[in-house]
Image (tube, rainbow, N blue to C red; front, side, top):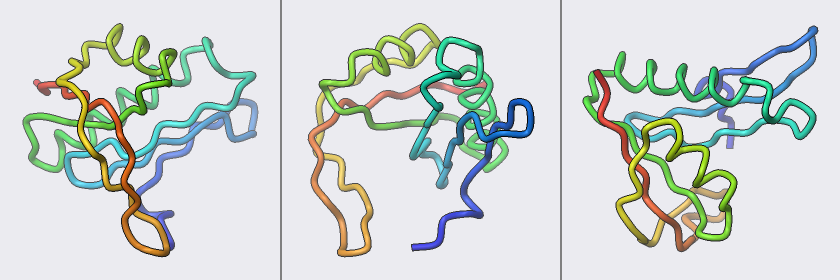
Amino acid sequence: MQRVGDAVVALVGGAVAGFVMVVDDEVEQVYVARHHRGSGVAVALLAEAERLVAAGGHEQAWLAVVAGNLRARQFYARNGWEDTGLFDHHAPSDQGPVRVPAHRYVKRLA
């Protein structure tokens, strides 16, 4: 599955520090390399994801976080995202959707 067109990459000193992927109103993936966590890279990537969702004409963005990822859940809450509860997320894969129990987070966009 080719997804390069859905991704925004953060570079620090010429090296990849993280990336975010947006599809329609979903912030599908946010990844920050371990040694860049806590540096502001995640905040910048999330802000860009929110901008992209809004630019796509959506008033609200959403994302899925597995229940056990407490660090990510706290990060989204600190950045204005609301946990609307558990749901079965169907993550895409080359073999078809994979069911992943997750929390759905939403954020109204200005």
